Image (cartoon, rainbow, N blue to C red):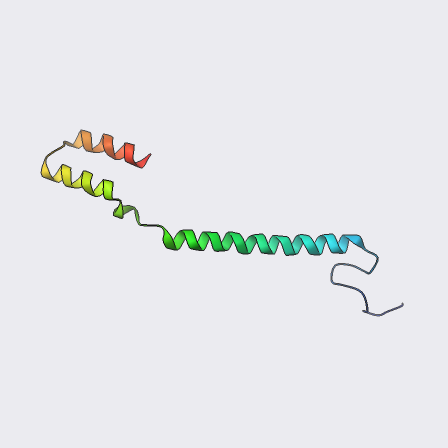
Amino acid sequence: MCGWGWGYGPYGGAGDPWGAVIGGAVSLLFLVGLIVLAIWAIRSFTRRPAGDDPAMQVLRRRLAAGEIDQADFEKTRQLLQS
């Protein structure tokens, strides 16, 4: 055997074009995974909790003050959540 370990990568020998394709695909999948992970982390840490919605706060205040009844509250709440 010629070249024991010299010129051979982890995905195939020197004359194996599939080694480069598989290596490139693994690298691309790793990069895409890092990007998806970064986007998920940014979105999860910058998202406001549902209880902080100013429109829902006004709606609850109006219900508590008696300006609207329960039916109007539910109808408007469903519109806001859609």
